[in-house]
Length: 323
Ligand SMILES: Nc1nc2c(c(=O)[nH]1)N[C@H]1C(S)=C(S)[C@@H](COP(=O)(O)O)O[C@H]1N2
Ligand SMILES: [Mo]
Image 1: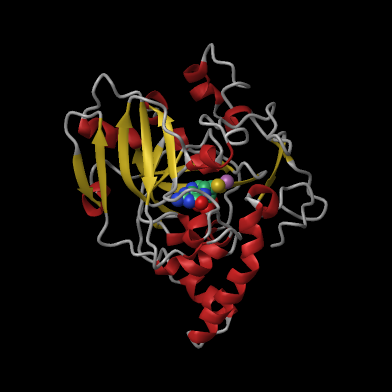
Image 2: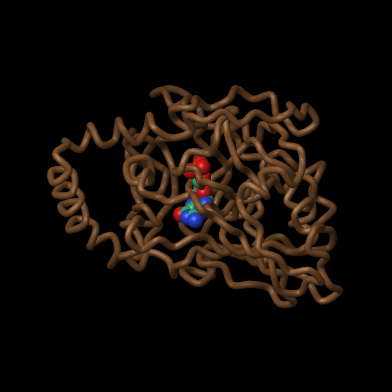
């Protein structure tokens, strides 16, 4: 799928700093060499990567209250059209390279302004609360969207375990950095590790989901195994993948995207059709899988269609200033 086909969507060269874009050629050449060294053509590597993950079943109890009725994006598109910059900036890079991610053993430390800081093992986390299946929209800031059946439970269930203190106002999420397994870390696209943040009340909102699977299977590596966030009313970049640390803090964290371009990627990053990205409109979106030549774009909805549930969180706030 060519990113150029849709015309108005930003090119990777627009989203990422120029130096990185320039260095990409060298990288592609090296990636080609790696495939050759493994004795496989590039396409065979891609096939292997796309078929291997998510084999193990991970069912969740269907949660109609948190399920949108939009047609679901195909498993294939959900697992081969990804943003996971630690593996590269092209949409196919995560599916191609993420097989190397080591997802066991895996722990997540939950720390900071909490009464009971604790390191959780991934298998412990899987059993912490009943797994639900929820179908959410995901809207990327680049102008495309998907509809994904996630398996997980509310982030609030985990946060309650550690008992946030009165000083905890924000939550900072840090994601994994495996130097030997993540080719994208060699390039300064973002400041690594990938860091994101939420206000505590956003993190405690019942829609904020801690995700372990999709389509009734264990989360494929390229989608953020073994656990990630799904925060459906915000742009996709807030839904950090492959979490290793959750820190409750008093001050608003600086996310990797704010660090890279504060004017373009704010802390709140609520989906808002009325507030354009400085370099492109956010009024419409392309639903992945619906992109025929004559398919009209969809109108982007305020808070990605979740206004009824989340608008109260932002009462009295200027959503232009707090983009
Ligand atoms: N660690 C990490 N998490 C990440 C990203 C990333 O590059 N690294 N990309 C974000 C962006 S921009 C989007 S749109 C979503 C994409 O999730 P998906 O590939 O599962 O659809 O993941 C988000 N989480
Ligand atoms: Mo995104």
